[in-house]
Image (cartoon, rainbow, N blue to C red; front, top):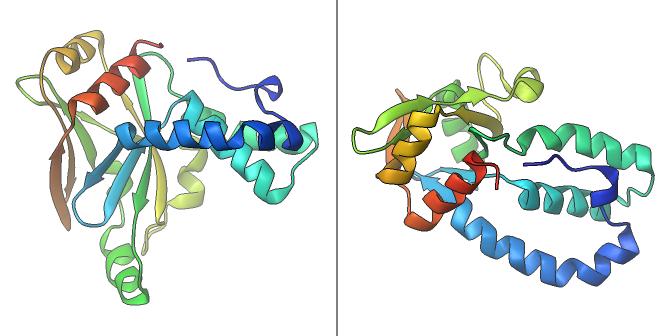
Length: 197
């Protein structure tokens, strides 16, 4: 999947003209690519459209108009567009109260290294890898961040297993053991990412 360039990011006036339709299509796309994993974690499998939307919305909210400013956003978010054979996801720890933050964020230290995608009839585990560009900013000793960026690298055999059988997303963190079977529409989206479509 090609990375985004300055030419892919519309200026603010042009984006306003397309925003309603683009936003509607990305919301629909994200519904297929979002996976709830237990009570407080959600993963969004990113692709070129979700990342373009993220950058366009950041530019709109922050009124970024210079090429240099947009390039900074491209440099931050382009690593989340998956290369063929890989998947990229944003892991959200979704907490709504101060008490939940104080309970869950210390308990979930290391969660960003303990997510598995289990593929095929044998449910072979593919462990995630933390996005190197964000690891130093988001990983701490005593408390975790509410957002992490992770990747999965699948072999050709694992990609074939994903296409041929069931897939499950799982957390193997000692304080948060949950798994969720992936819907067929989510598996289809992931297959497109893995094959570079």
